[in-house]
Image 1 (cartoon, rainbow, N blue to C red):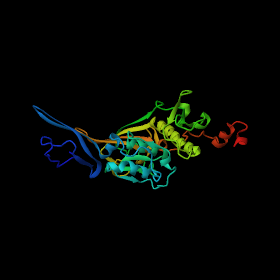
Image 2 (cartoon, rainbow, N blue to C red; image 1 turned 180 degrees about the vertical axis):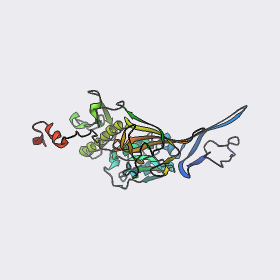
Image 3 (cartoon, rainbow, N blue to C red; image 1 turned 30 degrees about the vertical axis):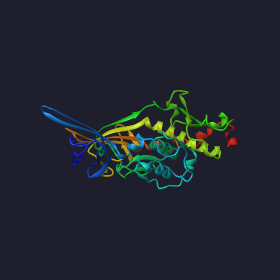
Length: 350
């Protein structure tokens, strides 16, 4: 229904849709996938003819292939996340666009990581995107997009009445979350004598009291040690990763999934898209606040027509700095309460 006018080729005269054929898929006149056909299965029976098709985006090559770049430290002129993405992706004929509006680097990224021939380009750039608090995704044209988490929601909130969701589910869990995330900075590759008091970086779950006591995890930062030995910059770099990891893991346990009628977002009047900010104001189930569209699945049901499966995550879960979401106590000045809970000598230690 979606892919039209694909003809047989000399290489596969028996296939209506040849394996390896480049395709573009449109929904409601909007381009949603640029990719290739991976496999086809044609089947006949006494009363039916079935053709099954599987394919992936053009950018899937970034996951399937290893790099062809020289091993070792990246060229020092590659400063921004965009510079490195373009360097890693361009040889696969994949274009990169930076929509974050801020190409100035938080860190000189080329100093903080190394590559070898087995490095998968997407995994590598995705890791650096986490350090910078940026999202990395395919936009449907076969381009890789660098972007910030959506910051502005539509003026129309999604409610029980206007959302057109056939069903909606709120999911909360502590699985995959930890009270504390302890990162050991390159513990086996750092300079001799670099002690444990220096190489520890710690971040916390946004609601640690949800979790059993002492449910902690230690991770090792795999980025290379900077050539200039600047441990302060390296600690800041790894701290960003620790904060991001704690925030994202918390967010995975605070998700909303929904099945929508049709393919159109009622707040934007366009196709549902990843990294769209939606403001929820639901009463049953109770959902209130800003959520980001994390995944979208379009399909056509034989009996029910067009459908869209959606996953939403709390916006805070994608922000690099964890945000404490504990609600304030009614009638209590939370600032004074926080100061009252500090040890007697806290002000002297500031």
